[in-house]
Picture 1 (cartoon, one colour):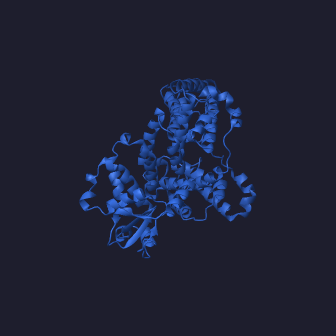
Picture 2 (cartoon, rainbow, N blue to C red):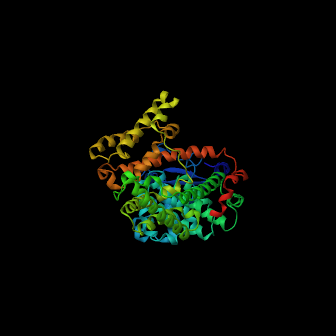
Picture 3 (tube, rainbow, N blue to C red):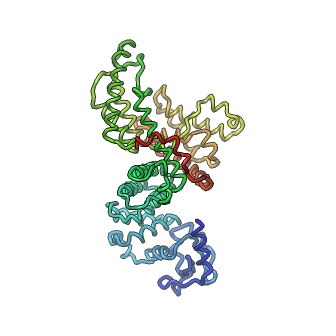
Length: 483
């Protein structure tokens, strides 16, 4: 509960409560207080759908001066809940709910999810699905609460549709980004946060200087977001400049010994490599011309891959172009996002074994062992993933899913979350028996869970952080022209 909410609750709790005019039934068997309002209701309408509420209503609450208090709720929104719980069957037919009831349904579904009223939650989600065929007509004031609702119930496609609508609103520059920033931060949705940061960077380009972010701070953008925006913008500019300067990304440039045209090493150096360099420079220049803003890095990378494929050449180059295009299409969002949320490089096994903590901490040792097994099973560069190794991998996933003593420190030291993200992004054909064991889906669930642990720690750290100041702009001053 925030300080403001605590102050408001303290104020209302000191006032004399009043009986709700609509939901204070004389034959009710339980009195509930929400804010400064008393509701006398029939508890069976709530508890038969919720184990949580069943436990809360275990004792009798029959006196106005000793009610069951629902902290953190609002009386107006609790009326929405009671309205539909008490409604006759004809009034809760999904086809009969109109768009004018959108606000009521949103908060009703949110309440049902919070208290594990699963049947009512499913009903609310079905109503929302029917009402929200086109998210472009949803009033802006409901977008952040809808985004949070869909995130918490696990409907990520709907959540992403809400964010798409938010991006169009932000691009118009008519609304503050603070509400959606807070929502995306609460959900630790790094992809969404990266997109919002890009909108703010483009806004600064049209007015304020990104490296003097006082206007953003005045609009309510917090210091943690300001630091990410500045460092991300700088990282994007430097990264593109390095990409421009490199002839060909080394991981995709075949050495002479692996020339796809089967040329001798000398001929490979004389013909293949110069051909790579020429086509690479053209592709980079065309991508930058088409997408001039540095925040369009994902589009630039995908354009590079397309441009290379559209220029047939030597067999060696064609293989390189197909390989790079496949990688960029699959990884462009991740490659972009990491500029705002950089990950430390993986430690090699030698460095792992030299850690003092690892020698003495059983949990750290266990986490690194699990990470190495996952890398060997799914991410080996020397051999394909084997179908017969999937049952042991399933057992390994089950062990991680059931492990309850995970700490942020062990996650950071082992970097197992990064391995899970790599597994999540693997193509389906590269994960044998994935339809049976759902490895990629489970990898995403574990990585999301662990990122939430990091997010909570970051929120605590952010409380003690200092505001972003002018000292941040010196390292990025020369990059202004790239915006």
